[in-house]
Every structure is written in C-alpha cells, then in structure tokens.
Image 1 (cartoon, rainbow, N blue to C red):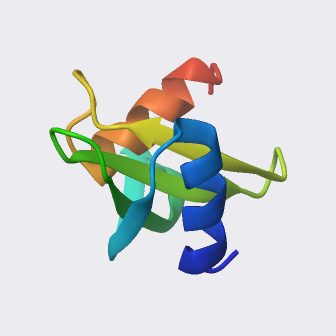
Image 2: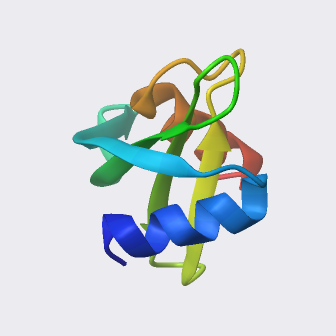
Image 3: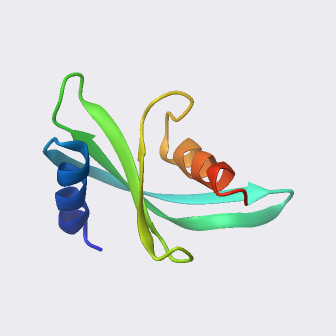
Length: 89
C-alpha cells in the first residue's frame, strides 16, 4: 500500500485527517535472530496534540497494522515490538 492509501485508511479509522511524515527501516531482533524487518510508515494525525501513528503491512496476516504513539510505544521500533508481543511471537 502507498502512503496515500494508508493515510486514507487511517483517517477513516481514527476519525482524523493525517499526513505522511517519514518511512523508517526497522529490524527487530530476538535472541540474536531477526524477528521482523520492514518499513514502518510514520503519520501525524491532525488532532491536538499532533499524535503520531506507525503503520505497516503484516504479510503473514495480510493486513494493515496501525499502532498509536502512546506509552509504552514511542518510536517505530517500539511499535513493532509491541505488535510482535501482542501477536505472541
């Protein structure tokens, strides 16, 4: 999915327009092995305060993943980590 397509999905899901900020390459390791690698897209939701949202496509689940920047999530890396934990991987 393109950043524009993801922005449309996020706007509907979160009830707020958003804008693409950047793409970040993330590699998450566990016990010395790569647990996940890919590109996380960062969006800013247009609501006070500007809230960040991290998004990527999970090829295993064939779905769009969105994680809001709320503790303990504070970066693309911690968003991926939280998602992995939530999936029990």
